[in-house]
Amino acid sequence: VAKIGRLSTKDTVLLLCDMQEKFRPNIFQFTNIVSNAARLLQASRVLGIPPILTEQYPKGLGPTVPELGAEDLKAHAKTSFTMMIEEVQKELEALGNPKRAILCGIEAHACIACTTFDLLEKGVEVHIVADAVSSRSQTDRLFALSRLKQSGAYLTTTEGVLLQLVQDAKHPNFKEIQKLLAHPSPDTGLLAFFSNM
Image (spheres, rainbow, N blue to C red):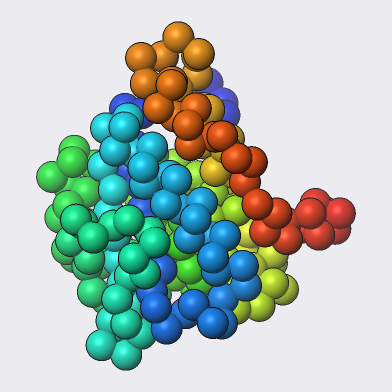
């Protein structure tokens, strides 16, 4: 059966990458990226999808921004450009090595890219939430998304993820997820990506 990238609440993990205070003034569309990631985190709690959070060199780059709503999560500190550090791998093992990862955060061409490559090499299906991922430069962001798609990652959107996870208006948690869809996702500058594909 061909891999089609269908999302499911089972065997899935949400990876939240390095959305930290010092990045705030420099990352393209930072506020909207974090807002979309926060909706994904809220949905993961409603749907029982475990979230994992990392911070890149927090001593220098500061803590995770409060608007993500991740205060209750243990932040795994790292210096490598992949989320797949030993502590994260142990957490994934404890979860039974999920087959799918929903990935959001920053930066697209650095930590998101390296994490994606590591996950794909392990046979994990990677769903990159394009409107919840960014870089300092829109050029780096768009080329990273294109490159990661070439490597076999699936590109999706916040709303796409939420609707694929519930799949039916009769889903017992649909009303809670519907509240997260009340306002359309803000434009994060991805239309240029499609006009140049």
